[in-house]
Image (cartoon, rainbow, N blue to C red; front, side, top):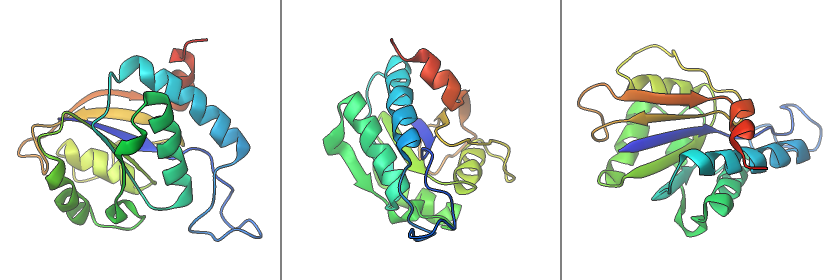
Length: 166
């Protein structure tokens, strides 16, 4: 199983007046950059079986942008276990039902994604960092992993934009 882990795009800064701190939307710059990053993703991801996203606006909008570019819009599912602060154990338990799928994308937040990626690699401390819009691929036999997964690649947003066809 290929697990693609994506941090949401650039959002309105925390503490901005008029926006709830926990559910801020993407900025115009964030949308534009993610659209280009998604075109870069299309160069390295042949297809996705499902995109699982946090219900928060910034993650869900990021998922919709990727789904539009990769043409898998109907396969977006909201997963409350991708909300910030959810335990890795609960997230892994919720992902078990997707075993058997070939390619699954998870869209969420830091520091949870770093902890999730590290746990897939069999490491108890966070060793993978996700900038906004960063994407990595980790291959595992199944969820929860019976043995450490393999980090195939980790692409910061700038590299994803460079991969995008002009």
